[in-house]
View 1 (cartoon, rainbow, N blue to C red):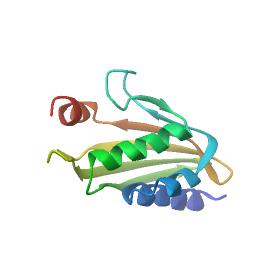
View 2: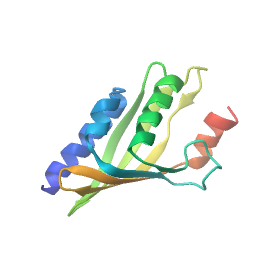
View 3: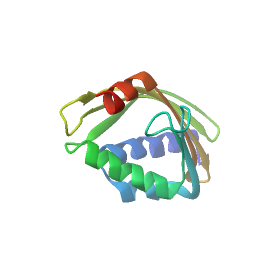
View 4: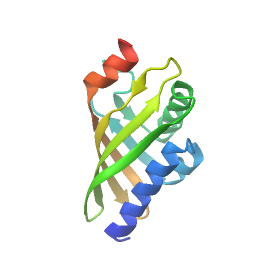
Length: 134
């Protein structure tokens, strides 16, 4: 698959995630996929590593926390070989009315047509202020 096709798959990933389409997101992942959210394990509610089943759980948690949805909007892209790096901004209003508007850097790694690895870097202070202190 070409880097242009990998980028299309990552775009589809964010579109499906923003739409709350759990099955659509999972269809883009390899069965052995891993999503690592940076931050020390246990210090934030979302830090650590998830397998495909964990991603399904994340989708459910996001749907509950953001009843009107949360959008993930990609902006800057870098692609090389089977790797796609992308800058992303999120926006959502939590059920309690707090606004979550974070900035991320994601790295996606592919094997064939499926995503096998996601690494997510974000403003952990903002996560803490909205989800723990908020």
